[in-house]
Structures are given as C-alpha cells and as structure tokens.
Amino acid sequence: MSTTHEAGWAHASGALRGPAWLRQPVDPNALVPQLWSMTAHKAGGELHVGGLSVPELVANVNTPAYVLDEADFRARARAFRDAFAAYDVFYAGKAFLCTAVAQWVHEEGLSLDVCSDGELTVALRAGFDPARIGYHGNNKSLVELRRAVAAGVGRIVVDSFDEISRLETITAEAGMTARVMVRVTAGVEAHTHEYIATAHEDQKFGFSITSGDALEAVRRVEAAPGIELLGLHSHIGSQIFDSSGFEVAARRVLALQARISDELGVTLPELDLGGGFGIAYTTQDDPSDPAQLATEMTKIVEHECRALGIPEPRLSVEPGRAIVGPAMCTVYTIGTVKAVQLDGGAVRSYVSVDGGMSDNIRTALYDADYSCTLVNRVSDAPPVLSRVVGKHCEAGDVVVKDEFLPGDLAPGDLLAVPGTGAYCRSMASNYNHALRPPVVAVRDGVARVVVRRETEDDLLATDMGDAS
Image (tube, rainbow, N blue to C red; front, side, top):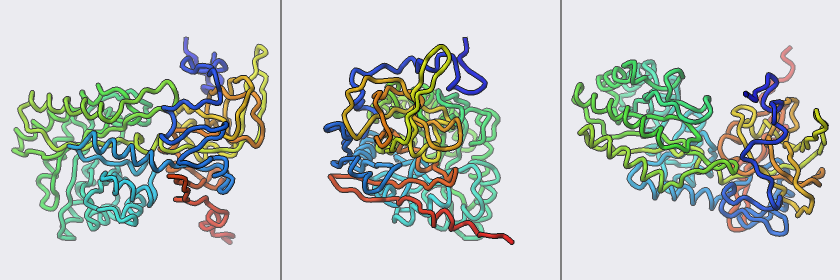
C-alpha cells in the first residue's frame, strides 16, 4: 500500500515511526564517522572540526554557519585526482564555489566546471587557469559565450543548435577558435531523484542520440570553421551509486562515436562520462571510493572501445558533490522544542533551529534525507525520534525529517548537520529576508571566514526604496 499523502510525506502513514533504515542509536552522542569530514570528532560532547571546538567557533561567528573542513576537501580532491590519474577531473563549481575553494581546486590539480557567468567570474578572480575550465549550461547567452571564448576557457559544452549558431557568430567576429564538446543524452534512467537525473530523453539537457540530433550537432560543429570539436559529453545525473548506468551510457555514447568515425571520418580525441557520484547523507547511503569508481569506469570504456574497434579517447569525469559535500557541516542553535500530540496518543518532537530552507532547500526540494547530532554537550537522556525544522513560514521547512536525538534538548543547544557542502550554500536564498550564513574554513586549529555572513546592508543594497 502506498504511504503517500496529499499533504506530503510528513503526514504519510507510518511517518512517525521513521524510515526503515533509521535505527535507534545505543549512544545518541556518538558520531557516525562515514557521515562526517575526516577531522570531525567529539571530545566531552563537543564537536571538533579542523582542530577547533565548534561551539567556541560559532560563539565568534554566530549561527547558522557552514563549517568547511579544508583538509578533508583537499584530501578528497587528491583522492579523485590520483584515482583518475589518466582522466581530467572537473570539480563542480555549482556544488559550492568561492574564491578560496577555486584556489584549492587549482592547487590540487583538478579542472573546474562552471555553468554561469558568475561562476566564471569567481574562477577568474581566483586566478584559475582558463584552459582548465569547462563551461556548462543549457542556455548560454551571446554575452556569456563571448566572455568564455575571450577568456580562453578550455571547453564549452554545447547543448543546443542555437548555441552552435551563437558560437559560429562569435568566433567569426573575434577571429578566435572555440573548443567544444557536444552534450548528448543517452536515454539512461539514473537511479536518483527525477530532478537530478539528466540523461533520459524527456528533459532539457543535450542532444538526443536516439533522434539523430546528436549526430547532426556533430556535423554542424565539424563544419564550423571557428569551432574545434573535442568530443562527446554524457552526464546521467547526480547522487548516483550504481555504476551500471555509466555502463549503458558509455555503450551508447561510444557507439555514436564509432558511427561518427565511420560516417564523418572524424576521430574524437576526448570523452566526458560525467559522474555525479553519491555521498553518505545518512546510514542508508554506501558510496564507492574513487579508486573503485575509476577501475569500474575504465574497464567499461576499454571493453566498449575494444568491441567497437575504435581508439580509446582521453576521458574526463565530474565527481559532482563527492568532493565538497562531506567536507562541510552546518551548525544551528535550537530555539524551541515542541512535543506535538498526534492521533493515537503518539508524540513527535519538533526541534526548531535558527536556519532552515533558506540555507538548505534540498529537503524541501528533493525530499532529501539528512542526519544531525547535538554538538555542545553530553546528554544522558534517552533518544527520541525528532524532526528538525527551520524558522521559515512554511510547513515544508524541514532540515532533518527523522533523527534520534537526546530527549533533553533545550533552547540554546547546538545541532550540526553533516554533508551540507554541496548545493546548500550555493542554493541558499533570502526567503523571509533571511541573511545567508557565512562559510568558515577550518584547518590545523585555524579558522578563516571565506564567505562572510550577509548583513542588512547587503539585503537592502538592491532595494531602490520608494518607487514614487
């Protein structure tokens, strides 16, 4: 029987019991290591990250605040770089980007994927080598493409015939060459949320292999004098754990590559298989390590190229959230704790914090699951099933849907949510005129604010006052 409810998942049958994968902990004070960054640990009930006490840290910067473990970020970047040594590894700027992070990515030898003029601006400000930048997006304007070409970005991933026409115009005007990859849709249904599955046919990205648009796009690019075709690009989605989707995608994309060689006499030197590898948000998630992913994906490509009798292209991969996601946590202060009486005499504990959907929209947008823990003291109280909610005027303003938390939580206590490095600060908003939180990087006992907290002056800077 379906557990859906017209008012949403929170009202579904059995929702109070929590999901089947959630187990009551023996000790609600303990961290689940795989959910946290590498330097995170507890001492006397206090969370420490990067050699610093988190309660002491947020006493100086206030909450909510994002805490970014620099050592963890760099270690994950190096792990992907080393595991995929024969590949170009592109860090996903859309997951989280600021000047400091762009510099870390550059220093660790990765390339950078941007998908807007703003992300390109940050990358260039950080001194990132334009030749190691890839430019994504399904609707790049003439202005954006002109800037990308002028900056000398290493590759532009074209997504429509309109973009090809725009690049033809731009390169003719500027007397320059644009290096491009053609994004194709392989018709693969990735096992992820429908909003982040990007290779099935009925969606906005890329050229369909099945319809013949992908082959026609390659013809158009090859015929354009100012455009250099590097290869094909395929991306099946995000938060993906199952490599079988990549196997199907590689088979279809490489079959197209063989057809391009046969019909157009063109050998494409590169292939991007995307990535979007998953991370552990809760104990139900079991991500693969970079070395395992590299081995599996390399074998897939080698096998298909052998079967098709075509040379192996240089490969690219895009780990997505897998680098920054686990490297950051968000710290909140509890404002209220409310025991809500439900039908049948059941009680749910609603723990309200000083942030919410303005700093983490993913729970409301994707029905995403998160974990959390008390981080400012030890509790001897038994755990109770709780829901952590935000302060916004929306019933769907939920941060953590289900978690066992100590039964003595009180206003002023601190909670931390792990795995918030990807798509939390980058998708943060000023809903209810909230001020977006700071990002504080920590390493070896030193903290530095890499993105400051917004102020009321920031909030009013674009408000032009009385229009009369």
